[in-house]
Length: 180
Image 1 (cartoon, one colour):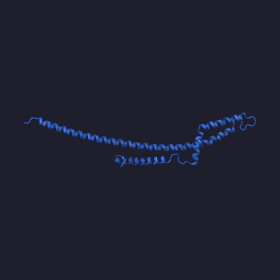
Image 2 (cartoon, rainbow, N blue to C red):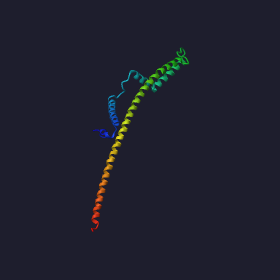
Image 3 (cartoon, rainbow, N blue to C red):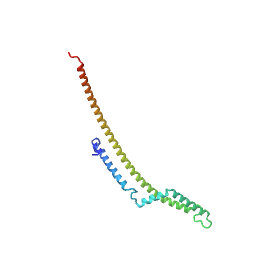
Image 4 (cartoon, helix red, strand yellow):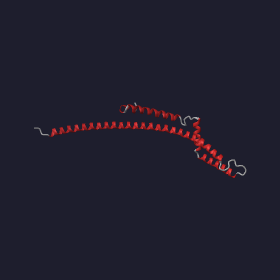
């Protein structure tokens, strides 16, 4: 018999069912986390979105892109023979606009997926908090029951001692009182 079943009569039926469900959920989540160490199975689109977002959000990407832009501008400004993209660099502007147009949806898809993961983790945390609250309530009930037993035992001990004291006083009172 588990501790939860031992105090079932002290919990409302709904609280007991929720506690049992939460324990089962916790066990299943532990099993899932132990079985799956890496990422869950992702679709091709999700993997691409995550890769693009991770790549574009890195210092390596910023440094490489800055280098390419500087080389592009320097070659087009200093080129003596043929300037393939003369100032105001319309072709470069088109390439950067194209990059931004495709990067934004990839980044948004990756953020949406991360938001879903965060929401699931928040739901799990909420369930754990509810379970912890119920377990704390169980502990409070156990402490109250122990205190109640202790107070009852002390009350009985006081009653027994009072009775003994009164009996001793009567015995002393009867022995010391003069007989007529």
